[in-house]
Image (cartoon, rainbow, N blue to C red; front, top):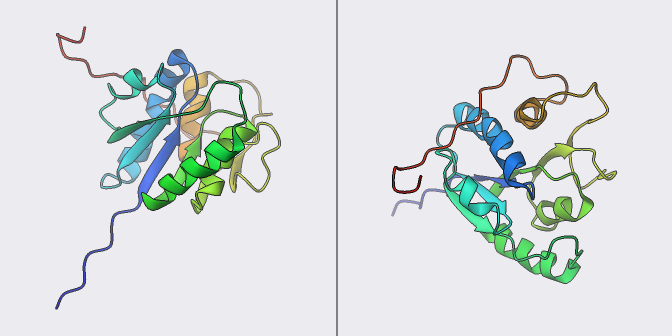
Length: 168
């Protein structure tokens, strides 16, 4: 009898709430895909931003957030985190700088939680980047999360979306 193969650990990216920021975060996904070509990348996004993520070749699945903008909804976040735990995420990249979005991967038990310090998210983010470095363009800001905390080594790739003529 052969043992069943273990599922491939997944990456979760928690989307910003704005379409423009989602587009500027796409190079982060490209860097993650290049570093781990066989690792599925899912994005947790608000319904208004989800269509943008679906146009990114690096995204395997888009999960829509059930949360209202600006509300803590702690019970709902805890329930949703249990669903995420079952999906087997090894890492989460938390792009919004809020405490409430950093709670989700922490509650889900995701081992590696990457993001900026934001709203003093010590403990919730365990691979913390600091946003108090000199200002940089948002593409580089998000792309820097793909590596170790510190400055981005090379210029990040440019954002790119894939759309069919029918979608355009």
